[in-house]
Length: 514
Image (cartoon, rainbow, N blue to C red; front, side, top):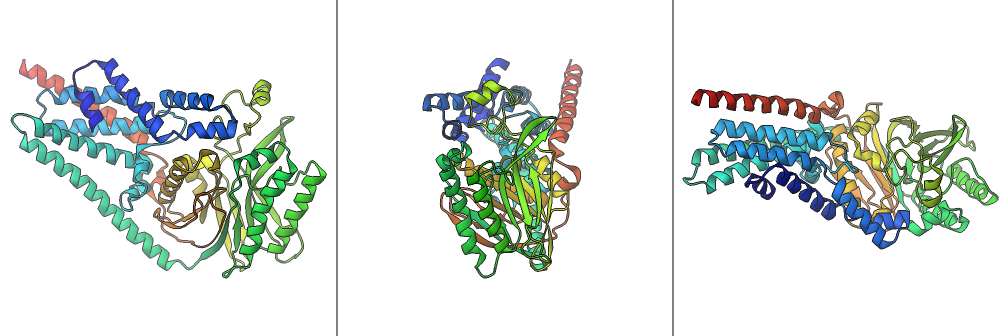
């Protein structure tokens, strides 16, 4: 609302763009400050270089849509100043909210940090995401703020515009009330689905809490660091396997297995592989774990950030079982790949910490069989892929019973990014109406229910073994599952049509006055 007020003051379009940039920069610094420690930890840059990267991020790609949204807000404010009627004022607020939402959804940025994620902890309001995704949440926030802002402007007008105030406040309250009513109905439907669920999966999640320096060391070939990381997952797994109830699926996070899986390149790596294989045989239950995979594509070696699942052959004890794999498709820019230059030898030589991974084929899926003979479909999501609603929706459409989200947020510090990443995951469960098991190296590991509730979670930065019961609910297909992430595109079309109508109506009114 203060930003709307600043844009409504006298000034040209350049001033509006500068105000848009200023807000983008402030948001970039205040919500993305973890970019500096992350680049220092992952790329091993100096503090001045890391801070410079944060400043570049905040100045260029934090919230670039605001530079386009600001002149639109100014355009609407100028028309509101010209004695707009109540209906005209409401339509301008609606038009601006639609266009802002479209820009928020469609303008590219490094991280999908849409405004709608702010409602992740609002149990009723976040249910709107199963209709129109995070874009619909953004629209509800922006439209509500615009209506209240217009009411505030009417309060300060002389004479006070009581009809204008009442109309805008009532509409804002009605919109939020309707959203709350829908959210309440969805929450009750989710609760009934959970109560009626006849299937469940007992899942053990291992949070190894391996330090960043250990992870960097084994990636460079340090065998002692690799042994340390593997032990951080194998030992808690042995303990968890004896819990009651016994886990039917064990989950390790992203890149937990410290090597290219099934392709040992030294005696030490072969020894670790044998040790891991023996544990898998002892467990005699499915295990999912992050590791690297190496293939030859078009005559060149291709490295993948992957998730593997091994399901035992219960009818043939002692055999390794069935191995399934998924290659990460949505790579994180400037961490796993550098767009356009990832295969350049100079970058590989001077930035050895970068993954330089190849993108996988697209959304995937696993099917496991539990020791009870239950068949369960898993929808794999690796770390930053949860930022892409389209990717997660496509994964869910493959018939997933559970979203299996593995990640490694330890590079980003203890505050900011880990909490944001968990918030994003909550919205993905609401959109798909699926339970989600999240396993992260340093946390936050969690069980997220179809309504976005966190049923179990780990403590950030603490070695943890979670033994959680995951209900396999049938909550029905959501609108966004059927239509895709549609609301942003629909907002652009409807916002432009409404803007044309408002300008035509204004021109017609001016001609009649003449």
